[in-house]
Image 1 (cartoon, rainbow, N blue to C red):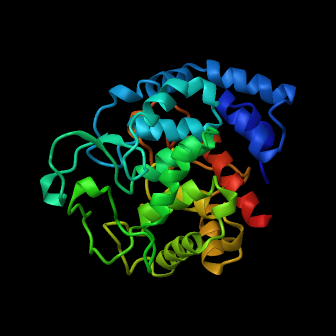
Image 2 (cartoon, rainbow, N blue to C red):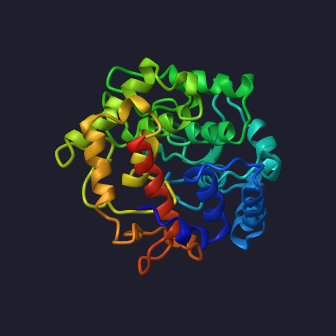
Length: 319
């Protein structure tokens, strides 16, 4: 049971996504247009957009689960359905920082212990570049520069899936894992990028990345790759989709029709479905504390945003 009426009583960003993603109304529908205006005028969303548009002045990433870094705020805004015009300053700044290889850059500081130089610079690694490309594609920015970035990311596929990889300027950079292992988070982000490119969604690279993640579910509790495991923390419901967890995992994999019939994905979706209350609502089990003020950043009451994400996943599984 999808609690549509309850969702439509929520914040404008929930109403907008409910109308477009769950009900299937078009952007030119009066109710959708009104919800979009309300979303853009919401103080939380307006502040989010302002921060994203300060892209050029972002602070350096030192850990990729920094949930309030402008990278993750950009991705969240794009995922909400914010239009390109709202974040044009950010897009201009992103395009000014394209590496010679193709992927776009963030300000990042990699410790010397991991092969970096220990000082902030504009560069990229596998745990940020696919997210920037996802956001650009989601915002409707698709040109030769973007597709060159996509092509380079896809060129890094390996036999077990995408490894931990980075720009050539990073030298011997390697995350905290075995070099020959795949990185679950990198595979998840590459697939999130590919979800915006239907013509590439059933390619060998996509299938290999999907299989890597489904196999990780199969051997959960036994295998960690680059510190990423599937255990009790993984299955806790959490928003926004920043790190390697159940909601991010399912929301990404269910976008690939060929994966939906797999018994491993059905099992993972069953874990999500089991967390609904009698009214079909879902409550956060973990929060990113720096998103305080957003309705999903609390564990007392059901969250409309998490409920929307969960039902969107489950609707795909039943399609």
